Length: 247
Image 1 (cartoon, rainbow, N blue to C red):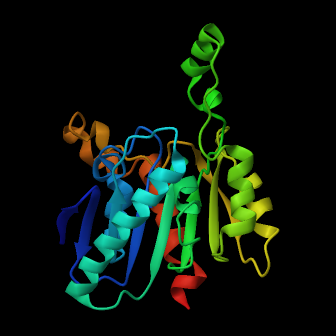
Image 2 (image 1 turned 30 degrees about the vertical axis):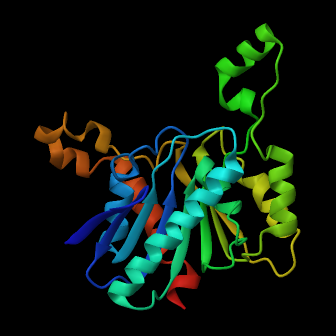
């Protein structure tokens, strides 16, 4: 059993004696209620006895500002958890898609965690991420880009991101994944220990089938055995058996 608490925009789910804390930022437009959209992923982490803090947000163009907000609210939530259980043995930041970028832009440069897990890192320009924007900008003759933009983000990773332990997870059927570019930037830093692994799945594999669970309750046994659920559990297995957590 785990307890649930909402602190600012952070959904906090705590087992009684957590072995560590996962700070989750999900993908664009699917993280308004991450405790629902990442339900299976979170549940599997809880079963592995990790506390999970997941940040709720609606994306905008200022990614640096959103990264700052997430970092501050995670810090607030972490302090409350520490008052409850004492020191936290391990702290892992977990990002999916845009969530990876927001973690990479954290004001502390990744110093105050034990590592980052980046699933399906996405760093496209705004007009590719939002197809309608390209049509509007051409019609109305204006330009809008994320801040920081794609190339600036990778420069910031090379120059200001200090966490050397990074586990990059990409899927075999994911044409939105840009983890190869991220790994190249990470490896240009001194003493980097980042690594990349490839799993079966696609860009939405980490997203819970929980959105459909209410419609499928009658067939719950089959749902539990679905390939998607197995892939989510495999993700969690890779995270919980990461050497920085087991050493």
